[in-house]
Image (cartoon, rainbow, N blue to C red; front, side):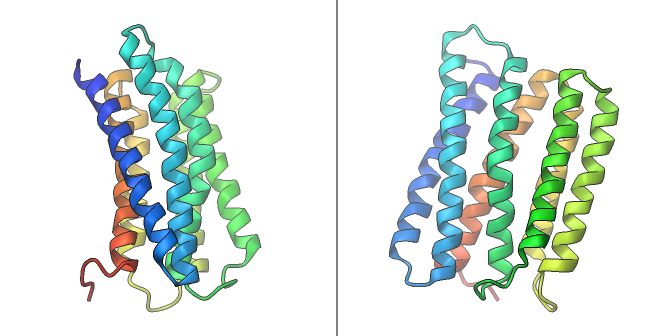
Length: 211
């Protein structure tokens, strides 16, 4: 197996294993807000695990085209990115019903606009650079709304900055060759969907002490 093949296998196993951790936390916690966040993170990892399971089955045949994975990746992201955003918003807003639905709808709309621009660039419908620039414009608008409209004053922005960095790196990967891009996407998916969620689990589950 080559590096690309290995990256799909490792991503699949990590995402699958992470599902159990967040599912158990969702069942055991008495805190409603924490349960919501863990349920969201579990849903994200289930969707991602199914997608990566399909990828790995294709990889095992030895007859696959990385470009054919693009459609399914974008479908995965269209489902999971709004959930990841919602999980982060609930992390910063632990009082129930504290996030205006209009704000969340606007953020999701911009998120999908970012994905649509990237998808058009991948398909060659528009120049890749146009897709890159349009996608980043929408992404920065997502960051702006999240930071200015949903984060309470005085909040520790560390989780938000990690989230923003990871998501920005997808844009960097987008401009790479097919093999490098897919390895990068796999690494980023593991970090943004599994390891980032594990960080939230450690915080809510009091696994580690956070000052």
